[in-house]
Amino acid sequence: MAISISQLSAGMWIDLDNQIFQVVDYQHVKPGKGAAFARVKIKNVRTQQVLERNLKASEKLEDVNLEERKLQYLYHADDKYHFMDNSTYEEQVVNASTLGDFVGFLKDGTQVSAVFHQEEILQINLPTFIEFEIQHTEPGLKGDSSRSSGKPATLETGKIVNVPLFIEIGDVVKIDTRTGAYVERVKK
Image (cartoon, rainbow, N blue to C red; front, side, top):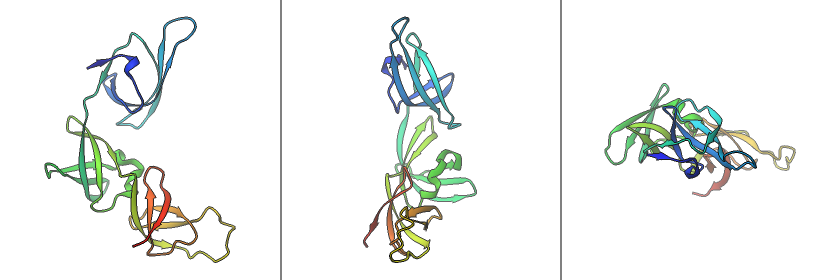
């Protein structure tokens, strides 16, 4: 379906030059002289390359039909990550490049949301917060305030995050998957 530049918004998916892009940022510009145009920052879903383009008001873009499905993470082998579609119970395989930095936050059984275009997975969205057990961290010294930023800790998935000094091995912590930041210690 063709859309005009006035219908664009951040987060929207468009087909431009036979490639699928997600609109990261959108600004409608109406100069004193000349025709209005849109200054957009778009991200190619396959290459992850971010581009800035000026689109004329007369340009027609194609909206991309997407489907969102719930998947459950099963396992990974090499750089292939295997998920199960919760509605059809079919296995879906995703390359590590599609997941990007999220791979360190995938635990067995994690429920994710996948964006599909013609049976191809374009994007995997993790839950905002996931709880992890700390597998390794150095002990925090009482009264040590020189490292106010915290200390590194290894999660059960092998990902290293920064945590406060009072966190110990075996503690369960809540992590923000968007930023990789420690949120809180979870009492079990």
